[in-house]
Length: 590
Ligand code: M6R
Image (tube, rainbow, N blue to C red; front, top):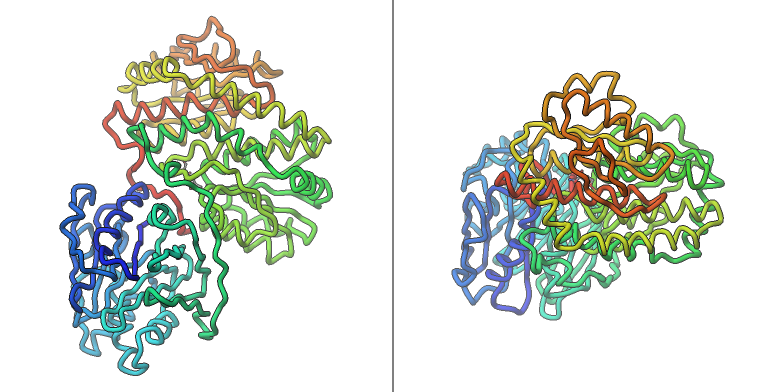
C-alpha cells in the first residue's frame, strides 16, 4: 500500500531523485510522505502530511548520494508528521522506511524502552531503527544487526534502512515487495518499478526471506535466516517510461481505458506452443480452478463461461480469499489458474501456497513481469498490458479475459479462430473509443451524477461484467452500485428500484439476449431508467450506448463504456479516480 524508494551511488542528487521517484508512486495512494538524506555526514529528515506534489525538488541538497523516501497510508498511528516515515534511531545514524505490519511491535518497543530508547511516533515501524541500533552494540556492523532484528519481527514487512556511517542501504523482505534497480551509477530500491523506471530497466527481485546490502558500488543478496549469499539474475523490464506516464490524459484511469485500443491485441500475442501446452494441461487436469481477487476475480468468472461455451469444459471459480477452503478438492493432478494484474496480491499468493501444498500445478496469468506470482508459478503467461497505475483495474481485465479466451479456443483446437476473433475485437475497440464516443459517455455521467444508487444486470459472461461494472463505479465514484444476474432480479433486488433509478443492462447478440431484454423491461416497469450497453438499440433503453457486436468476446467490449462511465462519474463528483479512498493498487495484506 505504501511506497518505498531509495538510492545509493555516485550521483549527488539523491534527494531530488527520491522525491521524483516518490511522485511516480503517488498512484498507490497515501496520506503523508517523508525523505531522509545523508548530507555532509549527517541525516536530514523532512516529512509532512498531505501530498508530495507541491514540494520543489530544488529544496533538496545537491550533495546527497544516499537517500530513502516513503509515501504512507496510515495503519498503526494516525495521519501525523511524527508518524510519517522515515523513522530514525536515537542519534539519527539509521533511518528506516517500512511497508507491512510488525505484529509484535508493542513487545519490541517495551523491550527497547527498557534499554533506554525513546520513541517519537505511534507506529510499529519505528522499532526497526532502534532495534538495529541496539543490535549494532553487539554485532558492530549495520547489516548483521539488521539481519538479527529481522529474526525478531513477526508479521509482514518490506523495509529499507539507511546507515550514514557505513554509507549503505539494507533492504529486507517478508511479504511486502521490494525491487532493486541496477543503475550505471548506483542502486535503486523500491516497492514498485515506476519509481526508478526512468533511470534503469535492469532489475533484481528480492524474495521473501531475503536481504540485500549495497553501498552503491557492490550489492550482496543473502538469506535472512542463514546469512548465506544468494546469486541474483538481472532481468530487463520491457515497460517503457512513456507507458508508465499519463501523457495527454488527466488521469491514469482514462489513459488505461483508452490503452485498450491496443492492449487486447498485445494480450493475444502469445507463444502458440505455450498456449497449446497449457490448453492440453487443462484438458488433462483432474479439476481446474480459476482464482483471483476483485477485478481479476470477475475475469475468472467470465472465463468459467468461456471454458463452458467455447471449450465445453467445466472449470471452477473461487475468489482467492476463499480458496483455502477448497483444499479438499485439490490433488497433484489439479491445476490452479491464478489471475492477477500486480502479481503481488496476498490472497492470491496464499491460494498458490494452498495449491502447492497439495502438489497441484499453478498457472499464472499476470501483467507485472517478474512479480512474485509470475516467478513462483509453475507456468506463467503475461498479458502485456503495460504498466497499470490507476487503482481501478481496466486494461488488465480485458487482457486477462483475452488470454483466458484464447486458451479456451485452443482447448477446442480452434486457436486460430480465437486469435482472429480477439484481433477483430481489438480493432473494433479501437474504432469504438473515438472522441465523440467518449464525450457521449461523459455527458451521460453528467446526467446521472447525482443519483445515489446504480444497478447493473447481465447474463452469461455479461453477468461477471455486471459485477465488474459495480466494482468500477463503487471504487472511483463512491456511488452505491450493485451488479446482478438479470434472472436474479425478481428474487429480491427488484425491490430496490424506484422512479428514475439508473440501471445498466449489458446485452449481446447471443442466446440470452431476449432474457436480458425481458429483465430490463421488468426494471423499466418499476420506474428504472435503462441504460442499454448493446450492439443494437431496443425500445426499452432510455439511453443506448452502442458497442460493436463481438460475438463470444462481447464481455470485453461491453465493459469498456462502463469503465469510462465510472471514470467520468468520479470526475463529475469531484473525486480523484486515480487515488480512491481506502484503496491501494496492490493489496499485499490478507
Ligand atoms: O493486482 P491484482 O489483479 O491481483 O489485484 C486484484 C484486486 O485487488 C484488484 O483487481 C482490485 O479489485 C481493483 N481495485 C479493482 O479495480
